Length: 300
Image 1 (cartoon, one colour):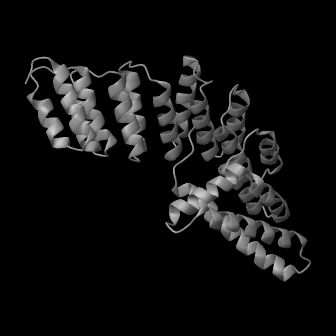
Image 2 (cartoon, helix red, strand yellow):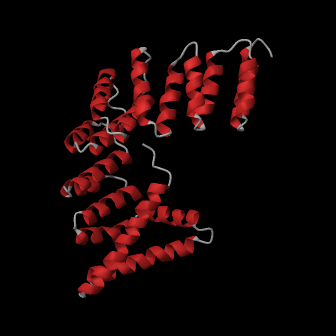
Image 3 (cartoon, rainbow, N blue to C red):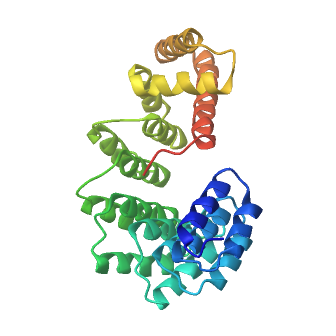
């Protein structure tokens, strides 16, 4: 093997890309001189493919760790659901005076939210403010999510109000949080202020009305959702991806049929029929939300 690490690093990357992990590690072991890139490549290979114990072994053996090493481990632990370990790893990172990136802070705050480590999350929030990163949208969204899951809606709202730039996710978080707290005037206000809605926005506001026994308001919104091209496109795509035999014509027919059913519910004077139709509608809505939950999440 050449004494220059460049060629070996390229071979390691190639093996890792195609899943030949043992071969990649063998090339690493045969290198006379490893550089930081060599270590981080093997570390990332294990972390990205869920072999967190092997990644941890590599991390412990590293002669020198940089921000890439810490990021790889913290994000890897978070993605594997080892939230408490991710938070502990972040504490070690700060203790070793390694500068955290906004990406690490976003993942750590999400880990704090996942295992309800609010006290530590508040410390991370203070750290974010000191670094001047409070305006980063993904970090602010993670703060809103963390405070919201802990039930501290007022602080979540304060973070939201201080945001200069907001993503669709920012609005969706607040709509969901307010709806869960039963304050439906606030999520509706946020919903109407949004310039763009996606399927999550519609699902959150309609489900919020349903959960708070405001069925009439939920039903009044549903036909509007079916006129939103982005929502209709989402439903059509999910139909096609979940059923090989589905096609756009079938999806469009389903949307039209649902619209007609909602109109009947809104105009019916027969309580029994209305209640039965409501049950069908909310089952449909539940399925819609489940589809989104099971699919790829929207970007922060």
